[in-house]
Amino acid sequence: MNIQHSQQSKVTTLPLKGERGGGLKQIAILGSTGSIGTQALQVIAAHADRFEARILTANRRWELLAEQARKFLPAAVVIADETYYEPLRTALADLPIAVYAGADALCQVVEGDEIDLVLTAMVGFAGLPPTIAAIRAGKPIALANKETMVVAGELINGLCQQFQVPILPVDSEHSAIFQSLMGEVSPIEKIILTASGGPFRTFTREQLESVTPAMALKHPNWDMGAKITIDSASMMNKGFEVIEAKWLFGVEPEKIQVVVHPQSVVHSAVQFADGAVKAQLGVPDMRVPIQLAFSFPERLQSDFDRLDWFTMHSLTFERPDTDRFRCLALAYESLRQGGNMPCIVNAANEIVNRAFLEGRCRFLQMADIIEQTMQRATFIKTPTYEDYLATDKEARRIAAEQTLPSKFV
Ligand code: NAD
Ligand code: MG
Image (cartoon, rainbow, N blue to C red; front, side, top):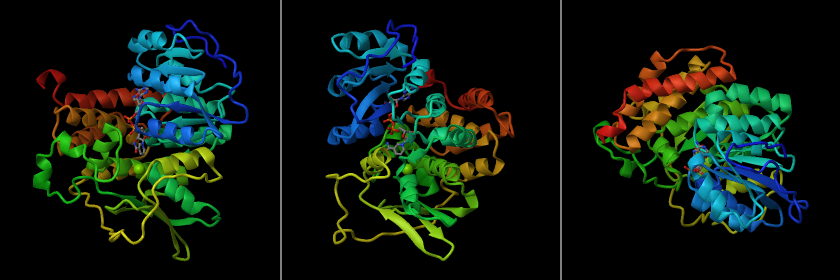
């Protein structure tokens, strides 16, 4: 593996595979301390005869990362925030595990020859550079980090084609669509993208005026990281999933119908030219799509809960309300405009998401600030990778100007 640096680390190469690795799929998990990352490790632990965690990474949670490394004995770990390099290195000093720090190291570790699959389970725009590095190194991607496709779907698709790299969706809806498409050769007439509607599904606009972060963090069906939980409450998450679906499945937004389905049992569906609809159903459990992305095209045994058809009361479906959940409409609008507009929306959303969590902007203000940022940031019709980096910076700055600064909280 060709890692030279991470300035703070003295290690220049990774330890040899040694006893480990024989025939097992070697998985790099970007974001192993998060909700998706920890569930991915559960899948690996349950199928230790098939998978091995080769690389583990985190942003700041070095203690959990060290604990995971002690248990799974990866070849290397990376802590993105360099402040935590020393304590992490010390904690793992007795083990043959290379320790790196910094965002660049994330891009370098995914390139290693031994890696068979990269799970992108980081949050936000930060997932883009290592995903690109992994694709350039020819690594299949298990994609959880939807922001990568939102920001730069076209660029990612081009690279995947150039480097012959498959993307296996981990997002439950996209995994469901992927599963519904297995064995099909005919074009998609329509994608039915289901949405739980989040904790505020039945709230009036007046009620939405005063919702708190604590209320938004209580998702009815899924236990996820804070950022995506807030995005689910605002339905920006569903907007992002429309964009993700467009790029993953090559379907125009007019053919992607969001359907609110509060029980989260139908994970999404595909309708074909003859009117037939194929859906994938199951108990809401992210380990199912994670495991399938790891084992594809096979399905492995699991002890996850099964659907109980006789206690399921009813499955209901509603039209989404884009007047109350304007973020969904803004995401569609960004796709209509194309170019770097979804990147602008993503950056502004990362700022308002954090601001709302920290009490620096109100719930309904999030859409206002995103819309303002869409109007003010520089539009680029055919952005390059460097343009995306610049757009992300500019849009964050514009959005941040419209939230209260941290000192006011
Ligand atoms: P999380 O906040 O629980 O975990 C995020 C992980 O990424 C952590 O390990 C964190 O240390 C790491 N990380 C965060 N910022 C980083 C940075 N700047 N540099 C390096 N590492 C960083 O998030 P999550 O809920 O697991 O979500 C991860 C991704 O998967 C997101 O893109 C999310 O949209 C997507 N996703 C999550 C779920 C879910 O059920 N949680 C479902 C579908 C898709
Ligand atoms: Mg989803």
